[in-house]
Amino acid sequence: MNKKLQVFVSSTYTDLVEERQVAVEAILNAGHIPAGMELFKAGDESQKETIKRWIDESDVYMLILGGRYGAIDEETGKSYTHWEYDYAGKVGKPRFAIVIKEDALEAKIQQSGTKVMEKENPQKYQEFRKEVLSKISRFFSDEKDIKITILESLKEQENNKELKGWVSGENSGDLEKVLQENLSLIKENIKLKDRIEQTEQKIKSVKEFDGYSYEDIKDYLIEKKIPIPSIQTLGELAGEECSLFQIFITTKDWFSIGIENDYTMNEGARFLFYTVAPNLLAFNLLEKQKVAGEVYQRIQLSNSGQKFIAMYEMEKHKKTKSIMKK
Image 1 (cartoon, helix red, strand yellow):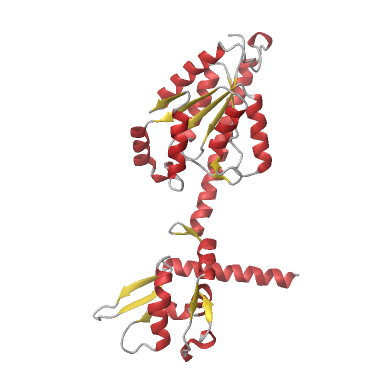
Image 2: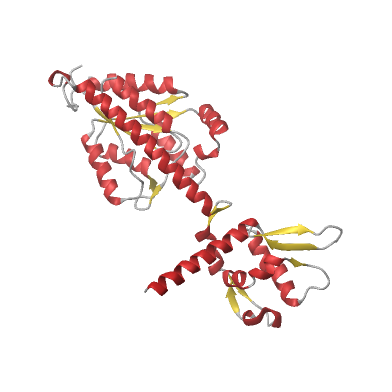
């Protein structure tokens, strides 16, 4: 072999870290050059342009398709992996894909959980998978399958006279050293990206409320309007049409103590219990409790509700502090 092919490796990231590293090592072991955007975060337009350039400069495009479709590019409505696949085809790059077998995906889900499967856009994932399988592609179940597929596919591409290759082995005595350094850098990049992903997941988990973010719930509560009857115990809210968010924040102390649907409840408590609370229960901001020895129930702030209130108070504090500095 007298030419080294540059292979652009494309995949979703969090579900295929190990498979991607196996692919990179297999490409290097075959004597070729892997390329990929290990540290790039989806969604940055300048990064998309850089990815285009890398694909343009590569000889071959390789896709590893697991169980996820990936983050959506707002411009195209497709995932970034799907966008890369289409772009490589558009510019005429030889493409081959390795696709996880369904039983292997099931085993992976059992081992790693549902984070390795597509939950937000399952229809788009299935359509993309169907498209990929209609082109040059092979299935994989384990690392051995990935290695064999890469070796065989690249062996075929070595005979493609239209591919010029990245560099000739005859002209570079230090090529093996360069390849090994490249592998080391890629491994370090993968580890760094993994740490970044883990940190982002930890930050995200702090903000999540059963799958919803603080901002998502707040936006919904602000948009949800509820007419309030003229009840004196509701104070300034009485007779107004207010957002659910305003009602929740204003009456948070009521819910903190707890509202019981016993015979002594006043009209304000009845309104909060039967009209307002069901909307907040839907997001687990409140919880129902059975009062021991009684037939009535108590509704009060849940742990999620307390966290939501705390995040709101901190947000308000930061805004006030910012205004004071100005």
